[in-house]
Picture 1: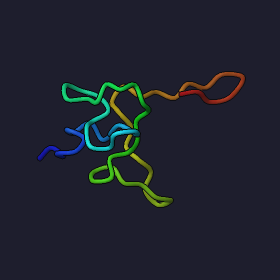
Picture 2: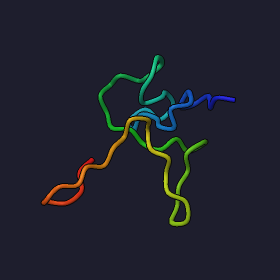
Picture 3: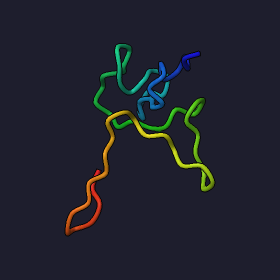
Picture 4: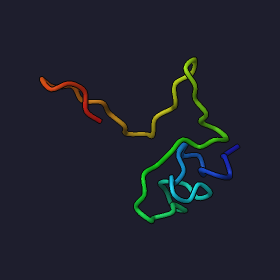
Length: 65
């Protein structure tokens, strides 16, 4: 079953937390994404699930995302 809030993307709009951050029904306002409070909660014991295609790059200056 796909989450009704994030439409299965695991992330919602930071400024408008009802629509998904990405996808067909995305908010589109340009704000940052935040974790979906329904299907992607996180705390010190369980890190968040990252969006598909997310990569961390490391170079001489450290990690980048």
